[in-house]
Length: 160
Image (cartoon, rainbow, N blue to C red; front, side, top):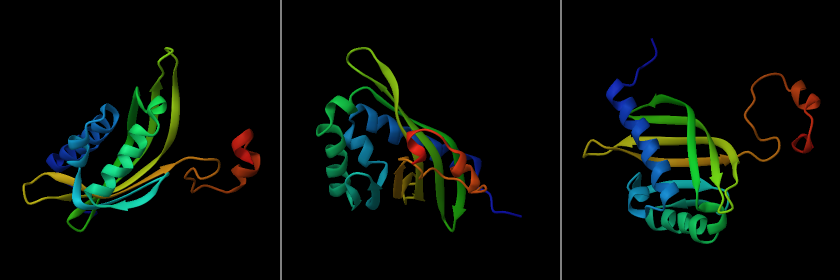
């Protein structure tokens, strides 16, 4: 039988992903950093892989303050969140999408991708992220384990 994650831990980890998205989308630096262990790693395009709170703060400042026209009004949505035990840690895999509200009242889906994170329980009992990899779908990097022949039949600009 496959090891199971306790229901309370599942709920706490789902809450962690919600706190992450909420803090990211409203510019709550302290709340955002609180989702990560002090020595956590994060990889996001751009600017790449960083480690530790100071570097994660720099990355999120790049996203927030270097791209304010893109960032204000965002909602990161996590879906199909799957949790699996990895020793004492828990692997989190999810699809994400960003809904974007613009100042001119337009709304659109800004981006999509996958989220791969490792959560670890801290001595205080809270779950925090030990690592996070954010993959943004660009062209043909969408996950697919089926027959590759579908790529030959794909149409549109992303098919190239």
